[in-house]
Length: 167
Image 1 (tube, one colour):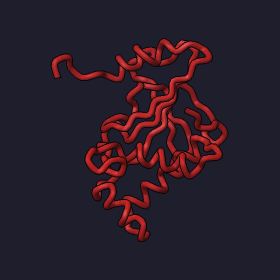
Image 2: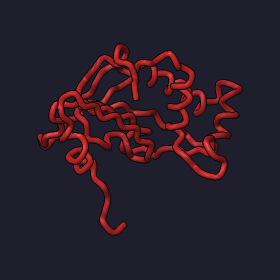
Image 3: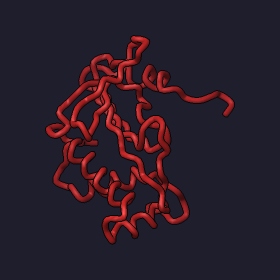
């Protein structure tokens, strides 16, 4: 409140730009308006199975110094992230974090980014929709909130169905 908001430009220049060759930054951000929080050049469109250019119109430098930055965000820049008490009944936590952890647990043999995003999206659609019995239980856990689609962004394009998700 006293220092002002943290801008994506500041995050990029502080932790993305300095990344040297051989270094990978992996960010998981479960917050409202977090879509392009690291200001990365590429955003993956799961529905079209393609990378979209997220270069700033100003032409400002938004790349690393040779490293790789990958971010999974809870929702688009203009969306609100849902919370849940699924982790701890007394404390609210991010719904995307819960879904991410459950998806990884269910795929303990390894998972690619593409399969991870698809699995998470399928869970979210079940929670947000009325199509199955389990969704009523899950919607109650998530307090009947609509959960947004996670967003994958990166400092460079890669094959999401070949690259393994590794933390």
